[in-house]
Amino acid sequence: MIILTFKDWVLTVDHESTKSTYAVVENGSAEDCNCNDCLNYIQNRGNIFPEQVKHLFNQLGVDYHKESEVWRMCKENDSTHRYSVIFHFKGSFEGTDCLVSLNGSQTIKLNPITDSFKIGFTKRDDLTYFKDKNDLIQIEIEIMVPWVIDRMLESEW
Image (cartoon, rainbow, N blue to C red; front, side, top):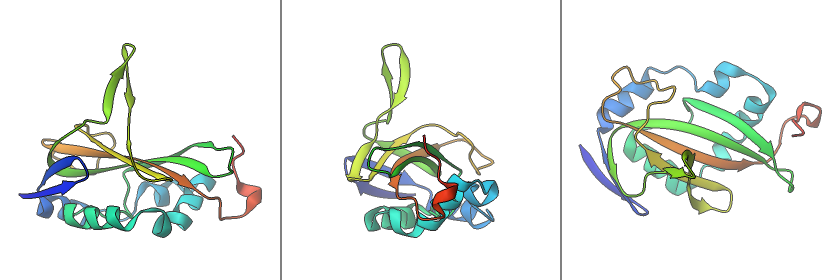
């Protein structure tokens, strides 16, 4: 197990188990979907992850090209599109859990890394690639993404 500090979190990670799980995954969910919103995400993927997050993912053993889920949430007033993205790693964390209770229901509260990128961690296993779901941490991300593919394919809501 490796212990890392990232922002206000202390992450304990089974790097080898995480890396070996991602190594056998052929595609991220965006490639498997192929809708216009996912095609736009794929075209932006290399540019929208901050370098410090790419570095963190490398330390965790997570391949940022292989998200377990991605979906476009909405188009913003500045014409960017808000996407939600999920990854996982084997381990644990200390610090704020991004899944919070608010007025009797649960919501996700993420911490900003840049003006267009937010991240958080929680103990969940939604749509994971991992067969063994014990000690699994879900990485929740929200990214503001420009539309770079054909404008005729752009979602307007």
